Image (tube, rainbow, N blue to C red; front, side):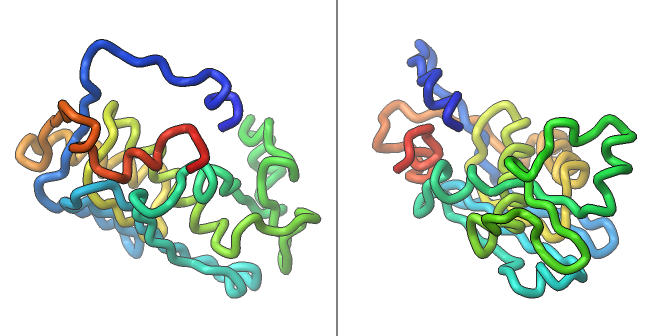
Length: 194
């Protein structure tokens, strides 16, 4: 976030385009599911389930209305997480090469190994919500609508994005001629720590 903030924002000549969800969509895969529904701003809900003592002690659900929450202060700082038993397999597959205790939460069989602990009581689920925000931005435009995920990951989130784009009756492209017309959620998605 620091580097993005340092780069700054350059005003463009054309109005920014948004995708507004017009009708609900949902995808289920076993006990995992994702959905989109109409909402006059941008909201992300997420829930996780891990059978592990660390997750029994932390929040496992989050409902984030970006009109009320600062993306930079409250969401962007949520680190990815992994388990010590998975680290070697990831490294052998060429994954997680930049990961360390400085930028990820590492959990052993009983506890968080990072000496400073968690940044938020709900950091695990906030990171999954952050992942979903990134996946939704692959639409190419900010989304006006509500997302909810339960135990989903990038692959399932991507299927939902594709399903939305494949159904032209489920969305519309919109622009706003006046800043006051813009949903409040997008003011809080700016790079400055509101």
